Length: 134
Image (cartoon, rainbow, N blue to C red; front, side):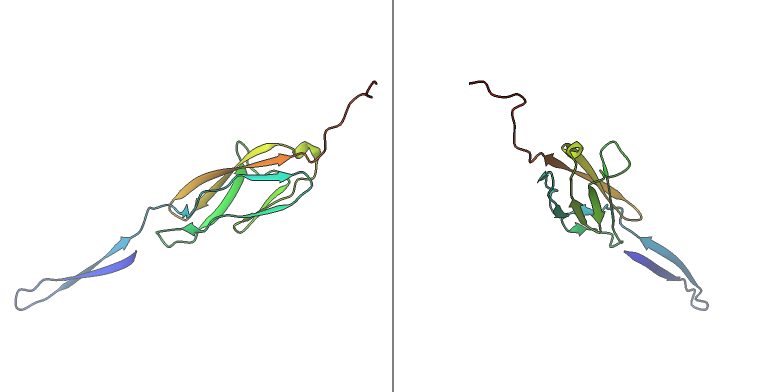
């Protein structure tokens, strides 16, 4: 990868003019993860951190990581992404859900998309809605 200058010399025995041109060699390979993404199961009221697997980029270009919930343009309010680590901290009953997170790895020439699921489960024990009759 890189820019290479090629010099071409033609000679007739008297004159030897040199012409130069550049060749740019780049990779169109998109960055990848070195392992699969893993489903995250969490109980309501708890906090989990999930570090994404290492990235591999054959082009050598810097990789950016971004993420959104499937079908939206943002992450759920209880999920944050800093660098390559998600913090998942649901604390509202309305956050008991299963949500798919789309993760994009990109460099300046190509990108790949991956996904994983977050399952937020209630930690409230079951209860009776009416008094028991003896």
